[in-house]
Image 1 (cartoon, rainbow, N blue to C red):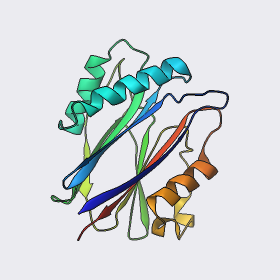
Image 2 (cartoon, rainbow, N blue to C red):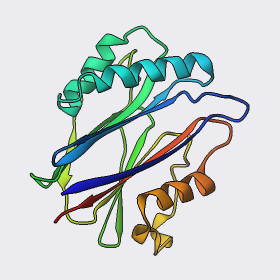
Image 3 (cartoon, rainbow, N blue to C red):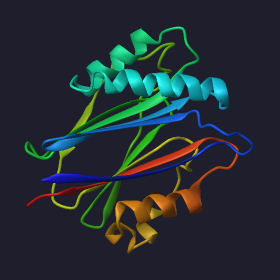
Length: 195
């Protein structure tokens, strides 16, 4: 059992560093995937994104809701961020996701795409009572997590062969066709494998 993960990231036009962050922690039977979108862009946002990445890597064993609360409390008063956390457990055949702000998760199974929108709020400033979403995981299920530098309204169902591509190819396609050049953009793609 394994989760194959690929990512693409690009800073806002004119910037050197991205204010988006990504954490991927592989586990024996799954993975934790976190996409961070710090408010604004440039060096200040990039510094906070790197600090958040380091903090999350230091405590990845918590539940997604517990980890989100820990990040919120630890960085309270900072610039603020939108964050989505996805935990995939292949052994239990389940995934769990929690998101705050405008970071988005899409899931593909058997020719159908499903979108999971985050709860309103800003991590570091004010977050709601977190309500993680759960669902089942099957062979070849595909997850795509994007920051708001990737367009929300994407007709993925019209790209019939997209789900057959490798995570790296999908991430590249998403970045090339749907990234907003006036914002930091991040896409992380994960495919589940059994056997």
